[in-house]
Amino acid sequence: MTKYLISFPSAAMIVPDEELPAVSDAAHAVVQEAKDAGVWVFGGGIDESIPPVLVDADGTVKNGTYPQTAELEGGYSVLELPSYDAALEWAAKIAAACRCAQEVRAFQYDPAS
Image (tube, rainbow, N blue to C red; front, side):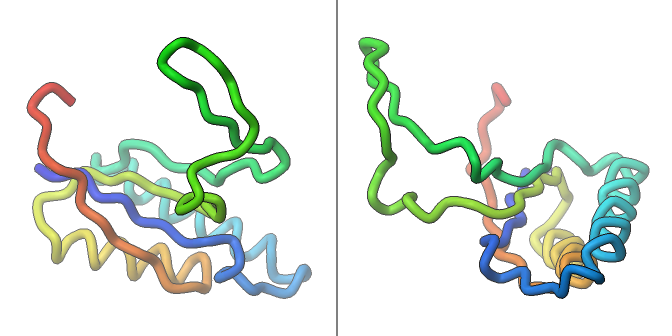
């Protein structure tokens, strides 16, 4: 089976403060559904209060990130699914719960992972 990354940037999730508890409950329900279905691998939101760093092969740590990932934030789910169509179905469930469109990407197959 293939692992899929289903994600959205923080700016896409525009929800009034009073609706955030309902969105959180809906998102947790989809996560539980994915766990119950045995397709959940990992998920969570990026903690945007902790700035990113780059770590070189020699262990040197530098503030910042790659330019193309400077805006990497938001929510991420990794699901292991039998097909691309299944990934689109789960993305639709997550989109409904989070009230924003989801991006779907497939991980390359790696027999060791």
